[in-house]
Length: 212
Ligand code: ADP
Ligand code: MG
Ligand code: MG
Image (cartoon, rainbow, N blue to C red; front, side):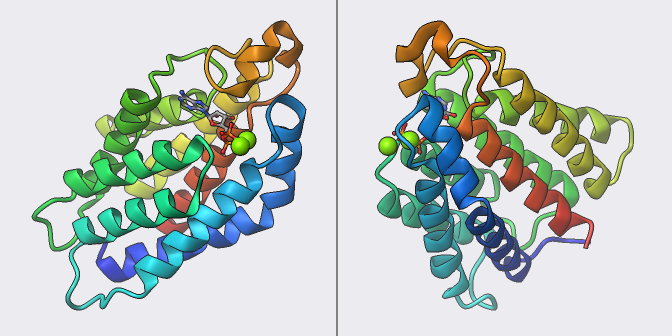
């Protein structure tokens, strides 16, 4: 079934709700290998997005505008490094959704792939550098692989969740190559990356939304 602007409004509301629930846990993770604000940043950003997107008239607004409005809201609300990274992700989502009145399942997977590409180009993090990329990149790949094998959108996103969780877990063993944790060298080993953890939450919300 096609994903409409109304659906995207619900999705962003769900993401914000889940980020709020996890705010303290994300701050705790960031407190260990960063500066402790990641939960506050993601919660503020996602709430601002949900509010901005929720205020759009769904009958008059195309998905591309929803994502562009999300990008602007996230960037304005978040001063931390996650701000420009997710703003870029949402902007790329807007480009991927351009000229579409609603998103097919394949369109939605293209949107996710474009988000990940945006995070990659903006932050320049490679796999294994203990960042959100270590959750996002395997998640997008798993979703696209599942699609090639004929899986439904909800099955693809379930595969993405699984891959994101594994990727996030694996960040614990990594030395950071980007972000604040890079300053800690091997003292960051043994601790999960907060940005990977919040990526898992966002992907879980997408999967929950697709299986509703
Ligand atoms: P800050 O470090 O500015 O306080 P946040 O706490 O919001 O920012 O976000 C920290 C997270 O951002 C890290 O856990 C990591 O996942 C992610 N991150 C930092 N730098 C990069 C980068 N260059 N590319 C991708 N992700 C990054
Ligand atoms: Mg931080
Ligand atoms: Mg900070």
